[in-house]
Amino acid sequence: MCAKDLEQKRLCLVAPEWAPPAISIHVLYPSRRDLTLAGRQFLAVLIKYMDLYATTVASEKAVP
Image 1 (cartoon, one colour):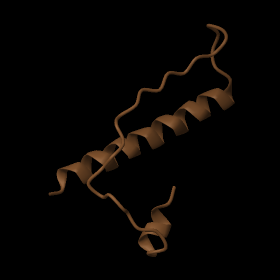
Image 2 (cartoon, one colour):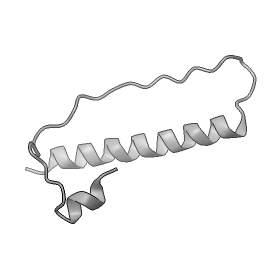
Image 3 (cartoon, rainbow, N blue to C red):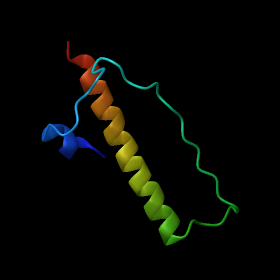
């Protein structure tokens, strides 16, 4: 979300060794029928960015 601003030094990390705790996300929808196209696309984007976030956090924690 703010990677570009960090790269261009408009923002800086004040506590680079800190990361928020992991969270769980649950998705609920009103029926057992298939999700709409919009619902499936939303879930796909959510999964993509949550996986990217998890990978980024894990790699930052691995760096001494």
